[in-house]
Image (cartoon, rainbow, N blue to C red):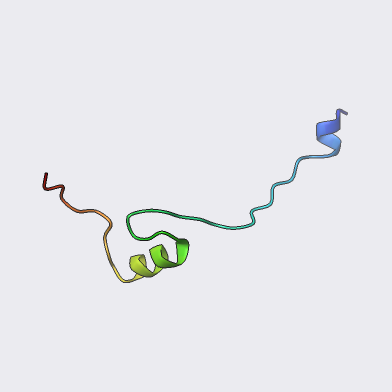
Length: 45
């Protein structure tokens, strides 16, 4: 048995981040999603 099978790698997720059209952080983005806001609009140029 090779070393990878004896000691599988483990992954730990320590947080969540987001920068998008609805906000600059997860809390703002989630709040705007729940409020039904859209991050999409027509480009007028």
